[in-house]
Length: 123
Image (cartoon, rainbow, N blue to C red):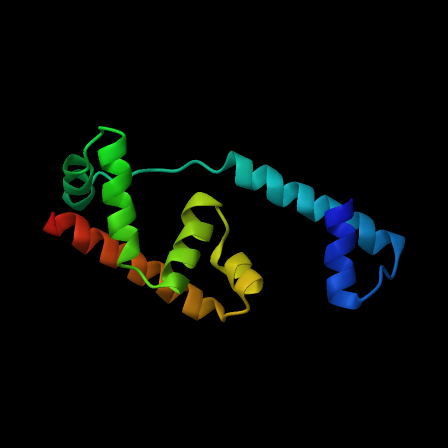
């Protein structure tokens, strides 16, 4: 309920009607349900097989390798990729959160994935 009230307050600077408030609550619930239900599929292309084969499953070594790869990304690329992959936000939601256009967010995500794939292939 608090999140719904905050969303309405940010958008309209007040909660106009009870119906709008309950609709917002319902929509937030549906969004959370869909986000939890989302299933992540891994592509079986040779590119992804190569990336998964090159990553060591040795815990600390993997963490260091990932940190090194992520350090090659710009801050805004890292932020967009984190929000999309780890937090599960859509491009529209990331655009709203960061105040950037949706197209910019999509290109940031695409570029960061492309850079990481190139770095993984180089190792």
